[in-house]
Length: 180
Image (cartoon, rainbow, N blue to C red; front, side, top):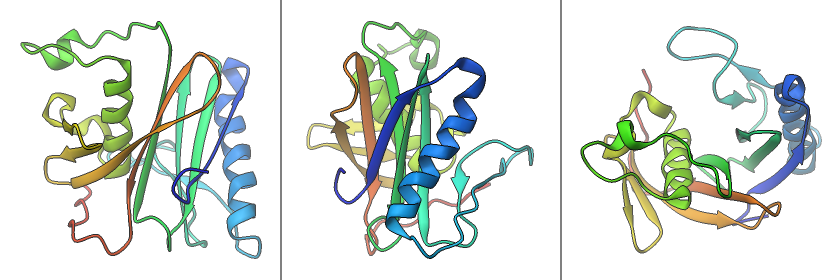
């Protein structure tokens, strides 16, 4: 657990990663809200497709999922502990093609990239916000244009992975992000 957010990870077969992610989310959710309806839904705010941020329509919970190769990482929090969460994972030594996303500037390292992606997931707009516009500060915060600030927390996860959590606490004076 990191700052009240439950986090789990596991290996899975490539074709099973979404099912595995949902199963991990439900397991963590049952620990936080055992009496709640833990039905998980995913609906893209842009196209309406069955993908995007996992949501609990009948439970006071938030969730986020990330994938890297055969790894699935999930985070679940009770709304009393978090107003927004996002999680991301990369494999140590991987080299995602980031140069075009950050040109003409230099791309971040893997820890910076996972922080940016986690913040964009917590924000709710994902890559609809240009990643090069997210600002990381030395005090462990990420600022997303039009979305405010998130605390950035490294997560000690499986060996060989870099996992980062973005978190906004309830009652924060930061305005919520307007979703498309």
